[in-house]
Amino acid sequence: MRPQERLAVIQRCVTREMARLGHVFTADGEVVRGPGTTAVAVREHPGGDGSGHVDLGYVLHLGRADGPVVWDCAAGLGKTEEEKLANAVRMWATTTASVLVELADGRGVYADHADHPELPGWHAVQGPAAVFGFGNEHLAAWLAEHRVMAALAPALRPQLTGPGPVGVKLFLGGKAGDDVAEVRVDGEVSEAASAALRALDWPRGERLCWARLFVLLTAERAAPVEAAPARAEAPAPMRPPAPAAVRPRGPFARWREARRAGR
Image 1 (cartoon, rainbow, N blue to C red):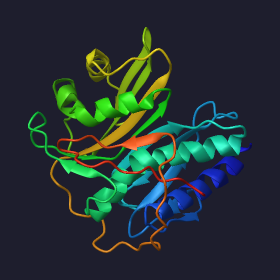
Image 2: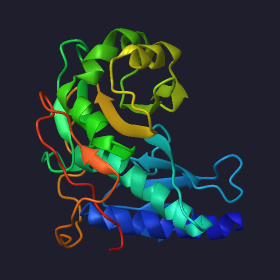
Image 3: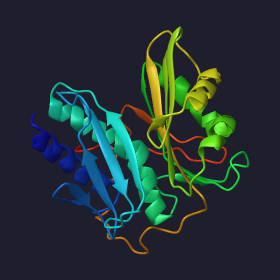
């Protein structure tokens, strides 16, 4: 698939997924414009030769040179390149775009808010974790019961030097004896936070299972990006697909169904 064809597929998928989150986005050249000053930018993922990787940047203030852009990458599986890209965008929407929509809406519908004493001066907005693989209920239950961000706080604090927002992505899983734990802060791997994540006692089974979650840190509880963003018609209720989506208990008190695209 040529770059422009990939871009068109990714933009269509972004439009569909954002509609499922209640926001109207439309493709406009190289970006997908949303309500007010929001947009989603797409950049070519290195080595994008048939892979299901996407790099998406959620723009909070389109047109401002100094406006923050929250970048994240995701990967998807499938039989065709288009299916892989669609699944990657769906994964991004479930874990990352839900957080940015909550930042705009501020209604606690798509993500949860928390102020961790271990991260003074920072407000956290966390979406559901996408948990997939064999025996994913064990890893999902562990995430629901543990305050992962609080446990990672000592390793994260030295990297929180700017005004924000700061995107923190966690990817963990694998199996016993062959696990992976990665924390990215604003897209860059944090070795200290990754080591702290690996040291936690999340369940390692005999078969492969992974989890992905995204947290946005702001220097203070942000007001909505737009006071009254344009919204799509509310989508019909959807049943939870695999991967499972879970939001931790404690400061993140509720479980939420992952949104299924195109079904």
